[in-house]
Image 1 (cartoon, rainbow, N blue to C red):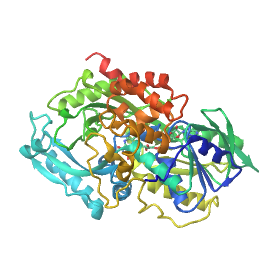
Image 2 (image 1 turned 45 degrees about the horizontal axis):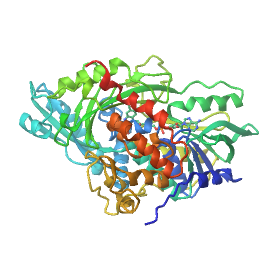
Image 3 (image 1 turned 45 degrees about the vertical axis):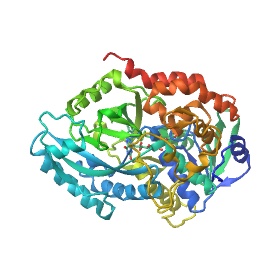
Image 4 (image 1 turned 135 degrees about the horizontal axis):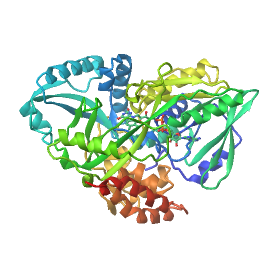
Length: 531
Ligand SMILES: Cc1cc2nc3c(=O)[nH]c(=O)nc-3n(C[C@H](O)[C@H](O)[C@H](O)COP(=O)(O)OP(=O)(O)OC[C@H]3O[C@@H](n4cnc5c(N)ncnc54)[C@H](O)[C@@H]3O)c2cc1C
């Protein structure tokens, strides 16, 4: 079997060094940047994308894993956002069914009025989805609710409402976007940070980036530079404004979201649980994912925007405390297998600076700086494709790229997508070769296909990660090609030395084992706090 994307680093770097002027240079390899790169490449533009760390290392590997219209945005009355996201939900499920699938959710009701009240809201959600609906909302009595989510707290339970949304493997979807863009000719390089923007006659004309492995610098020229650096967009925006002798007003207000992972037996039954109104008015999810259960999340302002933010103790207490109200078996700190923290790139309200982050718009923003740098941020994973279309429309309207028809990615199946459009195994089930879709058979031809390092992770998968999925470090493999760090941090720590050996066998001299040793302990820390 031939794969669309061999990714030997030396070849990528050789291409980067070529004297070429790209139509578009994208900075940032999360959902947003990868979506732009794929759409631009699919339209026939020449594209380069630089990612400072690894694809999806930022917010794009730390989502709640929902492909959703956003029930809570409906409650906020943001109908256009919900409608667009519901449309994108369908497109994503169709284009990557091995990585994104429908999932039934149940809202448990502990007061009689909640069943009709939430039922009406969710029927409206169905109506907004129209043909894009995944299944009809159902009002449930107590017995039917317990049958669907046997792990729910039965005391005082009156009934529930079942509705449909989607779920996905966010980091693997990001890799599928990167590889699909590469198969359309785009050059994507991870571990290569953009350091400076270049200007010609006051307009941005390229950038300088640095390969983290060799410290070598490269000059890239491009007709259009897109800043898709998530919560970090203000750094390049400041450079762009400074080039024009101006000061940029910060655009992003990062908000931290914490997730805890516990074993699957806390939520048997294959349905996700949504608590629409926690004690402090937030939404809490318990979602079956890759053989575990994700509990979350929080919404805490985090202006310092670190690459690996840590949870606040009160955020962990909040998730465990609320879960204890709604689950039959209350999870304790010692039950937590992994804790991860992500930063939402929320766009600052322009009029009311003191507004709470949970009320700030989740819509995306596309704008040009005084030096012509195009910045895109905000939005959500589910809408990455629509965001990319908006970005390219903006770039064309500014005269930075050719005006080519939109819609190139509407029906563009991502690498690994099965032809029949059906994922063989649910994303809720334990990981395994099914996550590779059509590439699972070829994976079996690699050495170590039957040598399992952990459930769902074979030695062949580590080799595949290097040869075809841009992996360069132990973290790249265990956090994002496999999701073991997110599922069970201690298990990831245990197999890290063997993963490092395999990376070395694949020609990577410095797989950064020490950095991973610190990281898995950070993800594992909650299990070792006081119960
Ligand atoms: C807790 C949480 C839960 C969420 N849940 C959901 C959900 O369930 N469903 C959903 O649809 N959305 C969800 N979202 C939203 C979604 O995850 C984000 O909107 C999306 O991932 C943002 O992607 P991005 O590409 O803009 O940013 P990022 O993924 O952060 O990517 C930006 C990238 O830019 C890189 N970068 C920064 N500076 C440079 C530089 N100088 N040079 C090169 N690269 C650089 C970074 O390393 C990073 O990889 C959630 C977000 C959070 C935080």
